[in-house]
Length: 308
Image 1: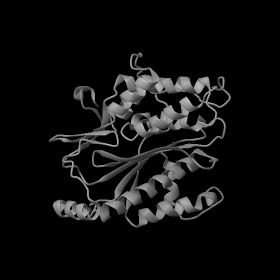
Image 2 (image 1 turned 90 degrees about the vertical axis):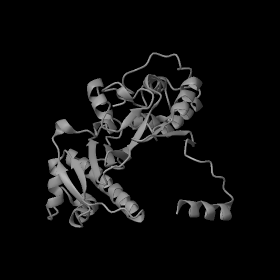
Image 3 (image 1 turned 135 degrees about the vertical axis):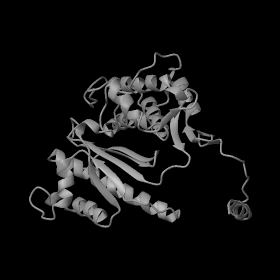
Image 4 (image 1 turned 120 degrees about the vertical axis):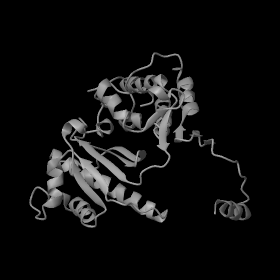
């Protein structure tokens, strides 16, 4: 079937077979008996070289905990193009480095008017990349065909707009196939509302992945397990009576409830101490941060003993 497809594409578009995948759009692919490793080592080193950070002192985390970025902090940069280019390149690096997703999401909010405060925070991310530029995502072979989903939000964390942040990541077996760290569109009046909005976004992404797997003739044996630490959000999905506190999230409520009723997902509660999606919603201290990235399936191909 693969050879027939190659022949058809060659007749239609005149393609060239380059053999086994090794390098594509800057992504380095290394296949072993255990699975597939994808990394942007050369791309990361090019970023460090261009910014003059090849010889810098490495940092343990991409962002200092409780570090708040604001438009009013620092002195505006005279040339914002350098900051815009740097953040743009870091955005592409998150394709194989989900550990810097939250930091880059925060930095990208200030590309219109960056200051010295923001460029310093960007340099912190570069120092973190310098510590392990070869890290990338690992996709194990003979993977279990089951979706495990983790959803979380940080309520009103933006000091300027008071909007919350949605964070989730989705595993197919032990392989990370989707993740997001994004500020919510509207302001939430309670932490439960923020959690439910994050849950609705997560469920919509899960449904898209389930549909994609079906198109690939892959059927999941069990409903997708969605882990959430908000008991009030889970209770809302079971309460079919809308009242004043839930009428403004009516659509989100129906989205989640329909997926539960259809058997596509199953909501499971986890204690707050086990919130492993926190790394997509806030800056974490060293111990919690390394616990977070150890669950993402990140591997350093050149130092596998320290790859998590």
